[in-house]
Structure formats: C-alpha cells, structure tokens
Image (cartoon, rainbow, N blue to C red):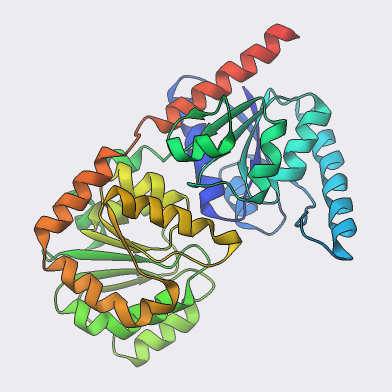
Length: 365
C-alpha cells in the first residue's frame, strides 16, 4: 500500500497515524509512507527518523476575520496544489488525515489528486480543521461515540490508535528498565514541547511527592534546560527517586511503570491511558480552541481521571497527587474504569479502514 498522511503539530495528531502504520505491518500489508506536514514541526523529524517520505506543505489558520484571512486562504490553496502534485508523484492509494491545520491543504490536495480520504478525529470533540474537512472525507472515523456523533452521519468508531507496546508492556519489567524503587511511581508529562505551569508545579511539590513515591518528570524539550537548572538549584538532581527527562520516545514504558499519571489532556490520553489502564490527573491546556477541555471532561465523566485547571495546578497538584496515592482502592477503581473504555484494537480497525478504502479505489479504477 502507498499511504499518505496529512496531520501534525502535536503528538495527538501524529501518533494515531504512526500506530495505524504499525498495525498495517502486523496485518501483513507492507506500506510506503509519504507524510504531508509542516516543515520544522515534530512530524518532519518523526517521519525522517522512521525513513518515511516527507513533503513540506505550506499552511495557515484559515478562519476568522480581518485582513489576514485572504492571505491565509491563499496559503491553504497553494498548499493544496503542492500537496496534490506530491500525491500524484507518490501515486498514493489513500490519505489518512488526523487533524491540525496542516491537514487542510493535505486533504484538499488529495481531493484534487483523486486520492480517497480517511478522516480520523482523535479528540473527544473536533477542532476547526476537522469540522471543515469532514465534508471532503470518503470515510470518517473517531476515537469515541461522542466524537463520532460530532462528525456526523456515517462516522465509524475505531477508538484511539495506540502502539502495541501500551497494551503489552508489563509493569515490573518497565520499572526495572527505568531504575525505579519498590515505592509507587508518579509519571508527570509536560508534553512534547512542555507545559510551564505543570513543570513549575512539579518542581514546587517534588520534595513532598518524593517522600511517598518515585517521580518520573518529562519536562518537554522546550522547557528542559530551564527545568533542569531549577531542579538542580532545588537539590532535586541528586534526590533519590527523581527522574528528569526532556522527552521519552518509549512512553509506553513510563506509562506502564506508573501508578498514577499526571498529564495535559491531549488526544493521546484517550487512548494511551485507557489501553494501559492507568488512573490519571489531567490538566487541560487552554489553547487550540479548548479541545483539551472536552477530552478531560470525557475522562472525568468515565471515572478514570481527576481534573485540575491550568491556573490551579501550582496550588493543587501536590495535595491531589498525595491524596490519591493514599487511596489505593480509589486508584484501582480508576484503573478499572479506564480499562473499561479502552479499545485496544483501535489501530487495527483504523488500518483495516485504510485497506478497504484503498481497495475500493482500485476497483473503481
């Protein structure tokens, strides 16, 4: 199969596609990949690290009002024309669009090139790009029933695709690999680029947390140097049980090792934390149209997550973590509720949709 991807900017738009590609291999469908993304963004480095083709697409936020709107629209049209040429040269069988502004010119380019589009909504509620693109999709898929309803008639629920390792990594092996003690472990994720308030809250409360648990602190590449300096100044660098990282490629290892996960509420939380059956505290970001609010509210309603507002995290993080660590029965109940809403076959289901869509195109042609 010759698969094109349009999406990026954040892990929530990148990793569903990565997981679907992995699942295609497991299904015995070797796949050539061309990623349509923004130059210099995380998707470019990720695609090149895996040996996939990458084509930079010009894009801009095509919504709102004012003098910039025509310029942004012109960027999107130019990006769509460039994407169309790249897709024709690649001879793509199907395009998977996963959201983010870069998915707009990629999807429009696919329609220009006659390439069928599978649109996947990773979040609990669609952002502007996916709301706009749903009319151009041949197949619509979503991470949950609520997300599918937002996409409209005909949408298929696959679940959020995650890498196989989130379902298969064992806790004891993960803890040994990360050098953790026998105490509980708390994983705190600042995201791939960082979350400054969450990082500041972690540094503030780390001494108290370390009295009860090991702390895996993934600060994000953007903030790592500053966080590292502040951690050293606070005496945390040599503290037993404190593990500071800028980024973890093997995130499944860290999630499997943790008894409690503290994280932003990006789309990946809907899949990774549920498949791994991990209780969580979510701190939704206020950016991107508030999509993280929908994700965190969904997880809270299911009973598998507590939620702390971004402007409250520096005050509330420590007490909330310590309270949950002191209630193992509550953590076990949250873990069970996370497992109950997991869809561990999501990657294979999305991969199968890609196969079927590509085969339908071949039959037509």
